[in-house]
Amino acid sequence: MLTKFIVCFIAGIGAGLGTGFAGMSAAAVISPMLITFLNMPAYEAVGIALASDVLASAVSAYTYGKNKNLDIRNGIVMMISVLCFTLLGSWIASLVPNQTMGSFSVFMTFLLGIKFIVKPVMTTKEAMAAVNPRKRFVQSVVFGVMIGFICGFIGAGGGMMMLLILTSVLGYELKTAVGTSVFIMAFTAFTGAASHFAIGGMPDILCLTFCVLSTLLWARIAALFANKASAITLNRATGVVLAVLGIAIMVVG
Image (cartoon, rainbow, N blue to C red; front, side):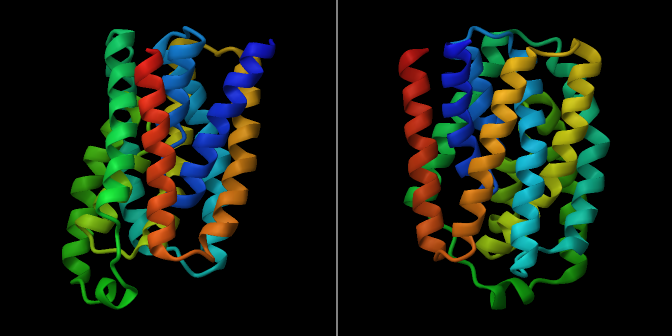
């Protein structure tokens, strides 16, 4: 039990900070850690990770929304597209070998960390407002479909891909992108977790509880600080956390 608690608590720290600071899916950290350190089946680990995403994303979204850093209108459009394809991704994931899913999650964690350090997102709200609304709507639908599939397949509440698309394709400034990302993730992660549990059965209850509570705590703390921090600070802090976690898991694995 002690080993489970330590692993889940540490995973929750990384996941919570990633979620609260930059809208990263908790699954980007929790899934590979549970797979690597507890030898947990990938499908079960993904279910726990998605469940941890739900409350952490919800409390983060509330914090960002309270600080006017949330685009609910376009967020809902993308969320609907994402939800429609999450179940499909979850079903296909049940047919994929453990190592494939675990390796992909670790690799994405590391790459995203490097991306935020090397090329931080510095878009302003003024630049964001200049984007054509119709174009953004169409892009939200199209990329929402892609994100939904990935959400169900690798256990990411969509956070990794969503943040990149919101900032790089849809032209969002960082804090609004994060707020919108966690808003969508709260719903996509719930759908993903429910489908994983329905298909694969209930996971280890202790691991589930430890991960959910730890992630929720650190996500709340991170979101409070993130809304007061500068864009460059958010980028670098998140980049370092994800890169270090990615390297550590790759070395151990």
